[in-house]
Amino acid sequence: MLTPVVLAAALMNAAMVAASAVSAILIADDLGPALAGLPNTAGVLGTAAGAVLIGRWTARLNRAQALRFGYGLGVAGGATTVLAAVGGPITLLFAGMFLLGAGNAAALLSRYAAADLAPVSKRSRAMSTVVWASTLGAAGGPFLLAPSQSAASVAGLPAIAGPFLLALAAVFSALVASTYIRRAKPADEPQVPTATSGRPVLLAAGVMVVGQLVMVSVMTAVPVHTHLHHDGLGVLGVMLSVHTLGMFALSPLTGWWIDRSGPRAVMLTGLVGLLVVAVLVTRTGMAFTPALFLLGYAWNLCYLGGSAQLGSAALESRVESSIWAVSALATATSPWLFTLGGFPVLAAVSLALAVPLLVLVLRQRSVTTAARVSLPRT
Image (cartoon, rainbow, N blue to C red; front, side, top):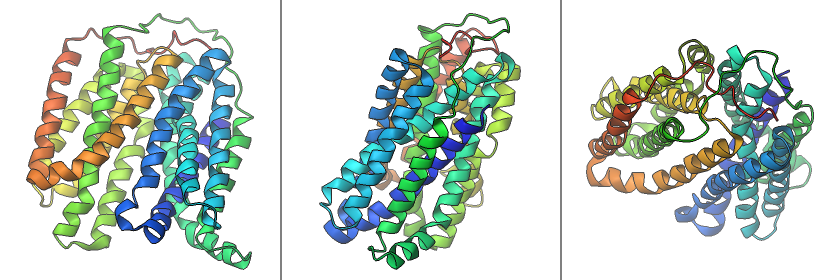
C-alpha cells in the first residue's frame, strides 16, 4: 500500500540531487563561480512555493491528486533544465530548478499521504518510512552522474546534459509511481480528536522550523570550516555522510517512538539534542563529527515529531513552505555569521532559538500518541 508513495519520494529525491549537483557547475562555467549557488536557491524557493500550491490542491481535490500535480510540475522542471543544458537560454535553468523544487515539495508532503494510508497506531511509522526512503535517492543519485554524462555524449549531446536527463527520467518515474497512490478510505479504527489550530500546532511548527534553521545554519558553515582548516574534501565527505546518516537512517525508530510515546516527548528530545549540538560544535576536536550525526538526528526528531502533531493539509503545506523559506534565509546568513565569530556565534543563535521553545513545549500538555487521527481522509 505504501510502496508507490515511498518509491515516488525516493525517485524525486534522486532527481533533485542529480540536478542540484550539476546546476552549480553549469552556472559557474557560464556566469562565474560567485553565482553558482543561484540554481539551488531557485530550487529551495520552488519547494516553498510548491508546498503552498499542493496544500491548496489537496483541499480542492484530494491528497493523491495533489501529489501528482506536484510531480507533474517537477517533470516540467526536469524538461526545462535539459533545454538549458543543451544550449537554451541559461535563464531556463533557474525556471527548471524552481519547478523541480515544486516536485520536491510533493515528495516531502507525501509523508502525510503515507500516514493517511496506515492504521492509526502506525501512522508515524508510515511517515518515517517515507523520510527514510530519502536516503535511497540521495545515496543512489550521485552514483549515476558519471554514467549519465557518458550516455549523453554517446547520444551526441553535451555531457553536462546527462545528469539533467537523469533527473528528468527520475521525476517522470516518480509521476508514474504516484498514479498508483490510492486515495485513503475512512478508517475503521476509533479515532481520537486532536487540535488543528492553537498552541500545540504553533509549537509543533516552531519546533520544525527551528530544527531546520539550526541544522542548515551549522551545515552551511561546515564546508567553510573544513576549508579554513585545510582538511580536504575527503574529511568533508565523511562529515557530510555522517550527518546525512543521522538525518535519515534512524527514521523508523523515530516513527515507532512517536506512535508509542506521542510527539511531545520526541520534540523535546530533538530540542535538547539541538542544545547539546550547540555546545559540541564549538569544540572542533574529536567530538565535532559525532556532533554532526547528533545534529542530523535532532533534526529528524524535530521534523517527524512536529509533523505528527499537525492536523490538516493546509497546516502541513504552510509549515513545509515556512521550513524551506527558512532554509533559504539560513543558507544566506550562516556564512556571514560564521565569519563574525565562527561556530560560537552560530551556537549562540541556536541556543537563543531553541531554549525558549524548549520551555514552551515543556509547559505544553501531553498529547495523545494518535496525534494526527483527526486529519481529513483524502
